[in-house]
Length: 109
View 1 (tube, rainbow, N blue to C red):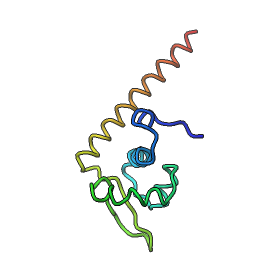
View 2 (view 1 turned 30 degrees about the vertical axis):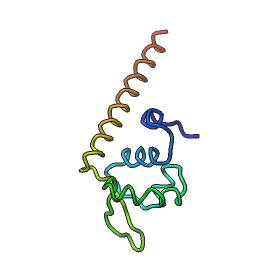
View 3 (view 1 turned 120 degrees about the vertical axis):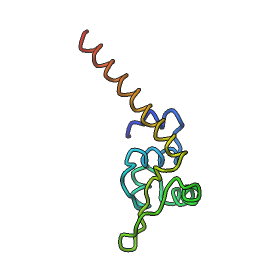
C-alpha cells in the first residue's frame, strides 16, 4: 500500500482529498478521467460523482481532447486552488525538513 502524503493525512483520506493531492502533485499536467481515478486510487464512478462540482467550482478545467478522450487540468489560477497548493507545498516542505533531521540524527548515532 502506498504511503499517504502529509497533505492526505492532515486533511483526511477521502476520495476528494486524494484527487486534489494527485492533481496538485502533477499540477502542470493534463489527465483523462481514467488517469485521475487510477492515480488517485479511486474508482472512475467515484470521480464522476465529484467531477461536476470540481468543474463548477473551477477547481479543474477541460483542456483539450485527445481523440475521444477529454483531458483535464488543475486550475492553478483559481484562488482556492492557489491556497491548496500553498498548503500542499508547505506540508511537503515540513515533511522534507523532518526527514532530513531524522536522517542526520541517525547518522550521528
